[in-house]
Image (cartoon, rainbow, N blue to C red; front, top):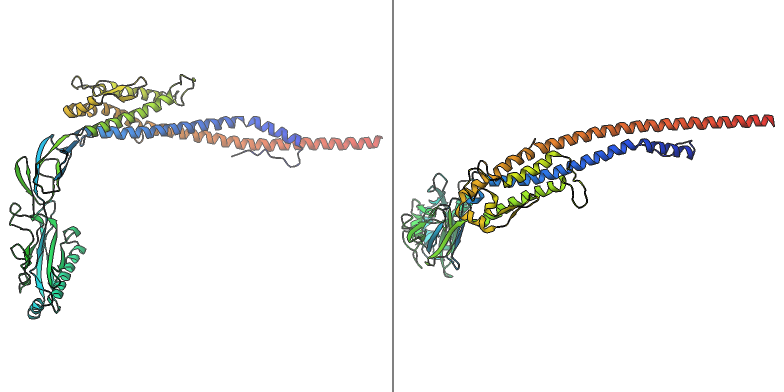
Length: 494
C-alpha cells in the first residue's frame, strides 16, 4: 500500500513541498522494513536453492545405499571382437567369467502350406458342394507366467460358394482371419499370438493356402483338429510331412518335443548343446541374456565382467553432487578473502555447521572396513582444502570394483558407510518437515509480520498526510483572514 504525496487541492506549492519533505522523513521506517523484507526473500531463495541441491545429493545417496540394487553389482557382457553370430548382455545377478558360444540354428516360426491346387479347377468347390460348411480348429501357444506351455484352440467355420480352387482357398483364408481377429478382439488371444493366413500362387495357374505362426520354436507351433469331413486333410495343411512343390505339410520339421523340433534354436555353450524356443536366451547362464542372430556354427567367446565404467559414473555423480552442496555452502556462509564480503548465510550457524558435518562424513574412516578400503581416499577420492572432493585415481576405484565389490559396497552403504551417514545427515535437512522446511516456514512468518507492519505504517502515513493537509489549510486560511483584516483596517485609516 502506497502513500499519496501528490498536490493537495487549495494548498500553495510551498506547503505541498513541506508535506512532501515531512512524509519523506516519516516514511524512512517503512523503507527499512521493505529492505528487511527483501533480505528475507533473498534468504528464502537461497534456502530454496540449497534445498534443490541437497535433494539431488539425497537422490544420489539413495542410489548408493539401495540394498536391493547396488550400483557396484553391475555387470558387463561383451563378445569377442568380430563376433557376428550373437550378442550378449548381463545384469547384476550374473557371475563373472568367460564362455564359448556357437549358434548352429536359429529358432523359427511354424509354417504350413496346403498341397498345390490348379487354380481354375473345382476340386475344393465340389468338396463344399458335397459336404457343406466345415468347422475345424487351430491351436496356438498362449503362454502365461504360471503355465508357459498353455495353448488355446480357435474354431474356424468355412462355408464357401467359390466356383474354383483359388476362390475356395480365399474363402478359407478369410474365415481363418475372421476367427482369429474375433479372438484378439475379445481378449482370448493377444495380437502377437495370432497366426497369419494367405493364399500364394507358385505359378500363374496354381494356388496354395499358407499358414504361419507368429511365435517361434516348438512352443509356438500350430496344431489342428480337423472338420467332420476332413477339410484339412483334403488340403494337407495338417500333414505330418515336409512340404514340397506339390504336397502340403510342414515348412520346417515340427517334431514331437523341443529337442526333436527344428523350429527351436540350437547352440553350443562351453561345448554343451542347448535348444530353446526363442532366439533370446535368458536361462542358459544366470543373469546373462544371449541374442542369437546368425546360425554360422562358429564358436566365439564372450566375457562377463564387473561394470567398472558404470560404477565409476555413479561415484563421479556422487562427487559432483557433494561438491555442488559444499561449494554453495562455502560461498554463502564464508567471508570472501579477496573483498571481505560476508556470504548471505554467514551469520547462520545451522548452515555453517552443515558444511563442516558433510566434510567430516565424507572423509572420516568407516568403522568395520578392512585396512586399505575404509576411506574414500583408498578408492582414489581425495578431499580438497575447501572440503570438495575429487576423483584423482580412477585405477584405484576400478580395482576395488573388480576385486573387492563387497568391501566397496560397505564403504558406502554399510552401517557406518560414507553414503549412509551422509544420507542420514541430509535427510534431517531435505526431508519434508525437515530443517529447511522449518526455516522457510519461519522466513514466511517473518515476511508476513513485516507486511503487517508495513500496512500499519501506510495507514499511519495516510492519516499523517491528511493531518498535515488540514493543518496547513488552516494556516493558509488564518493568513488569508489576517491579510483581509489588515487590508480593511488600512482602508479605514487611510
